[in-house]
Amino acid sequence: MNAGIISAFLLVVFVLALLATLLMALVRVSHANRRLRMERDALQQEKEVIFGFVHDVGEVFAHSEEIDLDRMLQRVLFYALRTTRAGAGVIYLMEPGETTLRARTVSGIFPPLAGTLDPGFTKAVSKSQHLEHMIRNQHVRKGEGLIGEVADFGKAILIEDAALDSRIPRYEEEFLHIHSIVLVPMRFLQKVLGVVAVTNRVDRRPFSETDMSLLQALADQASVSVHYAGMRESLDEKKQIDYDLNVARQIQTALLPKSIPHIEGVEMGAFAHPAREIGGDYYDFIRVDEDHLGIAIADVSGKGIVGAIMMSICRSTFRAQAPGCTNPADVLIAVDRVMADDIAEDMFVSMLYMVLNIRTRELTVARAGHERPALSQAGKRGFTIVDSPGIAMGIADMDAFEASIKPVTVPLQAHDVVVAYTDGVTEAMNVRGEEWGIDNFLEAVSIAAPEGANSVLNNVQQRLLRFVGDMGQYDDMTLLALRVLE
Image (cartoon, rainbow, N blue to C red; front, side, top):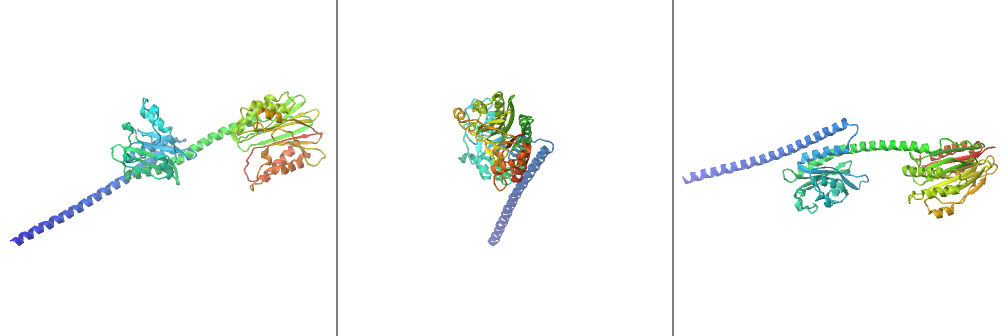
């Protein structure tokens, strides 16, 4: 009897143990199934979010000729908050130069991660608007704070409990407290375009690895769209710049002489080729009086828009001072007096001004630091370099400039040729880094001089282009030629 009871008891214990084992196995299976379902749901959520985002952004590209990058980023942030169930978020984009980032869009009450609250925050009527304005105007350097760290290293950061992390700023206002935060880089072709940051889940739970993975997946997809939207935005800006430069080029072309003056017994020609759409070289002819013609050529240090603006000032000043004054040195001094305050410290203007007496064929030359003109005299070999002293405008003070300028007068005879040029002609380089040089230039002039001023221009251009070849033009090129006829 005792043996039977013991056997029955042992059987019950065995059955209970077996049931417990089965129950534990069922629990493990249930947990595994639950984990799999959660992973499946997360993947499904990720797929739905990504597909929804791609479709949404695709609609923007398909139905808009102009992409509003800020509107695009607002959509990205909307999906980021929806994906992570975050209460607030911000997207920072890299600024030109790729050393700093700036917030391009903000949603919710996002506490500043860099710097501190400004004094106006406590007095602001709408603290949320003031806060957003403050964040948008803060520039974050790469490596600075959490945003800069993510941008610098290109790796996501998850902080589940912000109270334990010293990198999280502390604020007295409760609505600015950060409980949990995720930051992910926006990457495209191994390049960080920006940073997406979200904070404080609406269900008060900390962010998880799954949240970070979903946000990174979204940021990676968004980076493609942001990259191409930025390219399109840049192209639109370039089109506008090209249009503005074309208008500026037309205006600058209109400032140059529309035709070469006709002077009996004298043949003249000129050309100007800017290195860019607009340049800093300038030439001009002006009737001083009935017996004198003014011939000017100038070069502003600097190319493009800055050089063009300074050239325009120089032209206007010169045209106001030249009429009625037969001494070219006095004109250059008057121009320097007017322009002295407008020339930046890192700029200067070189100018050559020659006044031709139409009756006597005497040429009076004054030079403000410009290349010296070359004179080819009939019946003589080689060239005479007309050397008149003078320094460029913007190099020294007005007293020193005035003391340096000394005019020189040269009598011209029949068949004499005078050429004036800017350094872009003689310093033009080929693909081997060799300069064309003054000797090649004067050789091209001497060969064509007997044929006339226009032949000089054509021969110089042809020889110069052959020498330069495929090398891009580095500096503005301007040339003037004058030949005395019988």
